[in-house]
Amino acid sequence: MMITECKFSYDQIKKLSKEMVILIDTKEKANDHITDYFDKKGIAYKRQALEFGDYSFMIPQVEGLTSNELYFHKEIVVERKNSLEELSGNLGKNRDRFEKEFLKARNNGCSIHLMVENPQGYNDIMRHNYNTDFKPVAYMASLKSFEQRYDLKVQFIDKQYSGYNIYSTFYYYMRKMLH
Picture (cartoon, rainbow, N blue to C red):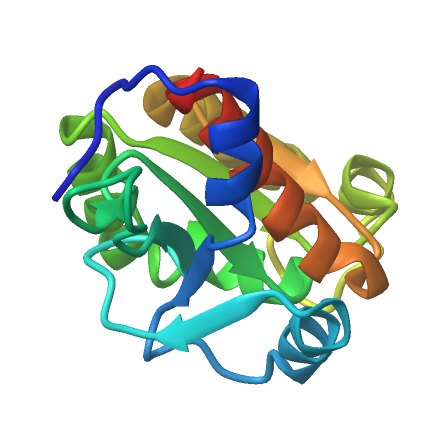
């Protein structure tokens, strides 16, 4: 079941938040730092094919609160890039595939959070502090075009905080949608 908006009390939302399960796309690789964070914090997760994005979440059926599982995988996703080089490839030579995925997400009304594991983000792009031939001006033009076209929420982050960022993005979205 997909959810658009429900109304729960504060205590019910608190209970539901403890049941949240992070969905990790089956194609997502090299994310031990993220799953290690989830394990350490007792955050449930499972691998599942997602139509778009690398991460989303669901809430299993909870006795007395929900009659079905609540899936948010078509409402909000985090797309993770492990480096500026990976993002450069997606905006350059793999642009068609990347754009089709974002177009599909946008057409479903999905909120897309692009998380790039590089805390210096825009500074490193402008200084060409990445190992590809993509010129900084073209890189920024592509990224800014994607931000506008697909209403991307771009986040540059140190990879040690990726798990926290994914969880908190979904946690606060869930709270907003269930309240």
